[in-house]
Image 1 (cartoon, helix red, strand yellow):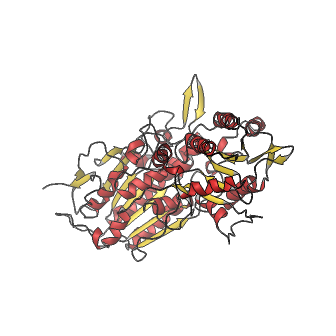
Image 2: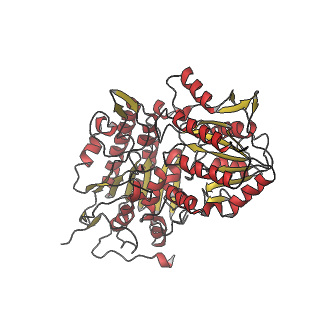
Image 3: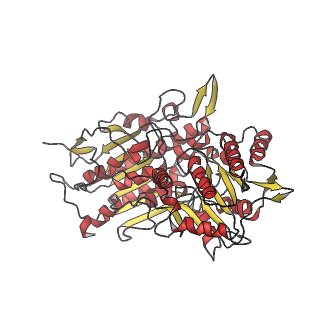
Length: 543
């Protein structure tokens, strides 16, 4: 820890209040018209904050957060990585693209072990999110893996696609399912047997996170492993049938399905098979990985646990080693702001509800589980509701606010960080009325919190990890379609100093992004930034 010691900021006067970082997840700076849920909501607190002298907009997508191009939307994982790292690291999508293009992913021990299963007659299974959203996965990466199977002479492959409808169009599943079916048919032309076996919507099947609802993982297990679920002759038929039966259904909430032939599932996962979870993002890959790997697993009744070789596209939890085997090395994020603060004796408190708890802990700490220093830190999780978020758009914002107010009044923690999940999670539903309520709930809670920070003589730092609620729909030829994905809009960054022991001003950083925030926190806490961190957005005013 001695190597992480930082110099005290010259001319800085210490003050008793806390620095409170408030992450308004999913609040971008949008078009400021009727499509913009942040603009159209009643937000007197945000309206005032947007007029503050220390307010700038930040880049929160593309290369600014380590993604391959500026055409890539940001997401909560890479956003919180950037917030905590203070530097820009190449992120999942780029790492995987590079490993697949160079062939490195096909030279590792995990791929060799998968092929060994295939050579002995086992089936190779690929489970993951099927879209080009580039947040959790990318369909072209799946295609590369399938091509790799053919090149290696694998005879039998089964794909278990999870439908997106969140990082891409709400009802776009067929635009991915149909090309995948066609590709699998093409790959099977030489006598191979490559098919879709099962699937379902991502919020119903397999892709739970933070142990919010293990039933989701169980539904996936039943479909992928046991072949239990509604039967269809093809994935295309499954999706179209669900559309026809419920015109309001969106892909992410579609029930699971099992593809059958003569009423027999075509691709259950059996002893001797190999399984790849092809998402590169970690949070929604951990639970299904545990279900495949843990001998004493008890979170649901698996009924049977086949002897398979299981691998992730990446390792989703480096500390817990989940999964044990993976195709691509994750980004090595060291020297996070959390590590520096602990090394310099700064006490901290982090809180969110279940849906974003891992973001202010695991992702913030560079993809590491647990505490950096339990003697200085306290993490607290508020359990999320298990209902569609548009039905309770206020989510747990009030409960989070109550806890933070308590911590501010206790005066024991110098740095507090929290995440309000509402504007992102409700934004993903595409329901305008609910989105506006979500924004207003956050605004109301923000107002309560700022009063307490002001009374304590602290500093509030308000920002977001990416946009979402700032665009509720798109319109083409007079037809509106829900916009349920993240936006590529900039996000706000505001410093509200209620202390007055120091005079801060904007430092004039050109084109700042999320990675500039860690150094800014150092400045506000009276520490010189680490040499390799991005520049601080604010500076002490020269007298």
